[in-house]
Image (spheres, rainbow, N blue to C red):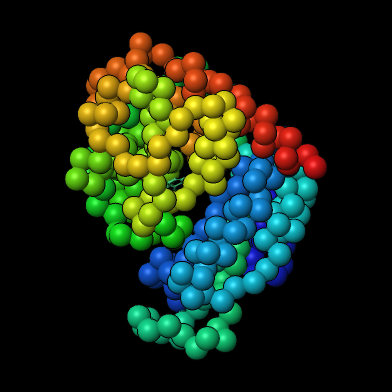
Length: 282
Ligand code: PLP
């Protein structure tokens, strides 16, 4: 397996990083996960835009041809379906210190490819089961940092409860899943999705999903929705680069609709997949 580290492609066993890397000591780092389907990067331009925004918000100076690196890893590793992980940290310090190192300190940039079945996910047929928990993350969830401890703890709560994921809440309003954006379709057919603000990650998949929903002439409202509203919804689903559009059939033990993946959700998933595969092949 070849990976990318600071300008070079090396075998994964020889890709080593300093213990004084700020990504390791302070999670002073941002990342992207890009899906690969039929050996093509999905929605790469939007991932690059978001990466550049995350870097800008944290004043990390890093420039690289993100697309070329990702394409090279797909080709060299003969990746058909899976993902590319890209991470950028503020770089290495001389000693442990909160203050940033000199601005000319090189960032640490690495990337790797990972095989994973994305299209044939059994969850698409059975739907996800969700529990809700308070969202105790920091208030800049719009930046895609590697500070993922709380999300990881919540994932383990889901595992312990025998369900698939957690939807996190602030003041009883759902923000998002541990690594997905959360959406519902109300009984009168309105798609409701949390507005873009500092409480959620601006999902790349969410953008194209909303475009497809509008093309299907679904009404869309971008606003927060409550746990009760979600429980009473006709359909619920999540979006993310690796789950694509994935139905949700249960929230806190309460069945959504008839407890089966929703029809509209299924159509959105199909149309989303058709759109991104068309776009990635040009
Ligand atoms: N929300 C969070 C907290 C995430 O970590 C992710 C992706 O990993 C998403 C939403 C979905 O974003 P995207 O569709 O860009 O993968």
